[in-house]
Amino acid sequence: MKEKYSIIAIPELRNSQDLEDRCEGVFPKVNKDLLVILGTLVYPYFLFGKEEEKYGYSSTKENLDRTMNIFNYYLNEQLQKKRLKNFPQFIKETKDGVLRIDRDKLSKAVETLNDIIEKTEKEVKEEYKRIADKLEKMKTPYFIVPSVFDFEPLLREYFKDKILHKEVKNLEGILISGFGGSPYIPQIPLLLEGPYLFKEDAHVNGGKIEVNYSEAIDFFNQIEQPDLVFTFWPPFGFSDEIEESLGNKKSVGSPGLCVVLENANPDLWIVGRGFERDVKYKQIGGTYIVSGAPQDVIHVLYDLDDRNAEINFYVDKKLVMHAKTSDTSLMKEIFF
Image (tube, rainbow, N blue to C red; front, side, top):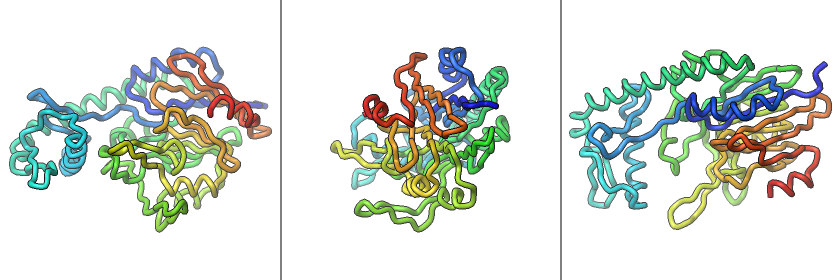
């Protein structure tokens, strides 16, 4: 009988080449029972400057309003930070200095916008196909925990039952659950809308979490307590600080996921999107929570008997961190 279960976690994938680069240096070194990719398979972007790069886009033609909403927020933020010098012709500045979309001018650009959307969808399909083919050749069972940036319905078209989102799997007696996407985050322009934007009406007031509704809490309340949890977004209070204007910092983690963390109390929780590079690992109650970042590969050896884990972090194919969940002194020495 197997004593340890070996899991490779790849946070924030960018494309098929990134998958190959990150796996190349780690896969030959370790046994692997499961591969988990925690978004984003193909990273979205916005285009500025050249004639053909004047229009932002989203994943489908029906998302024109989404594109416009993001432009409204994104360009206003960038203007405040003085990072943009030239603006698309359909951007106008109001008397109060806020940038808005001129719908009349934008309507004249829809043909160009649609061309870009079609090109984007074609490129995304090609990348998904390349990623799916490479994963198949690896012959390692895998799951994908989607990010809010992932494209639907294309993601499900290519990866079908491999998507671990609001689901729980029993593997070798280990209950593994996945919850992708993110809540609505006003401070992050790309998270204004999206197919994996989960519903949450929760706040932190005076250090106390107040929840009116949380899709995450609702899901985890309906399943058996998991041993391992994979989420794209961090729970509130863990590797979730971003810098706002004037150097102020704000936590953008999910309060709902924080409640789940306290109630479900899994052995291990792996986050795909950590915002603080120096915060990799932390013990919260009986759970050891780990955050990844682009370029990282996380290898977990989960002991099926005592439910402890060995965790190795690889960056650029090199082992840079090692810890055992049973040895808290070692964890503090390495991670804090």
